[in-house]
Length: 87
Image (cartoon, rainbow, N blue to C red; front, side, top):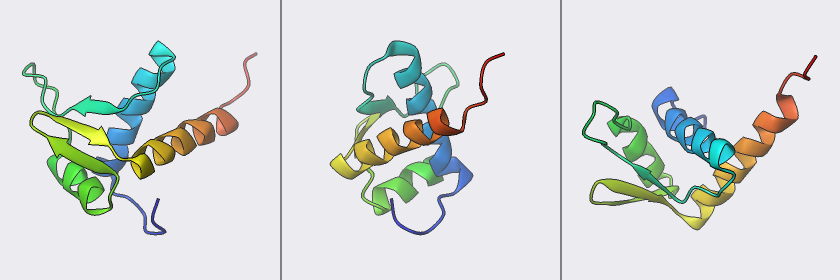
């Protein structure tokens, strides 16, 4: 990721993708931008990640670029490394 700090809107897209990756055990490569049930990706966050080269918008979905996939993996690794221990 670039050295600049991402907005909360942009981070929320990584959080959403990380959640689905952790729950499914699979790598997330795309996110739905609007599911039609009130869940929408933050529009400014999407634009920020597109401008940073992390996402590519394709209709109602956004795909992580190679750099975005690497950033998502690093994000998940950071979560795991900083998670409180059980018990």
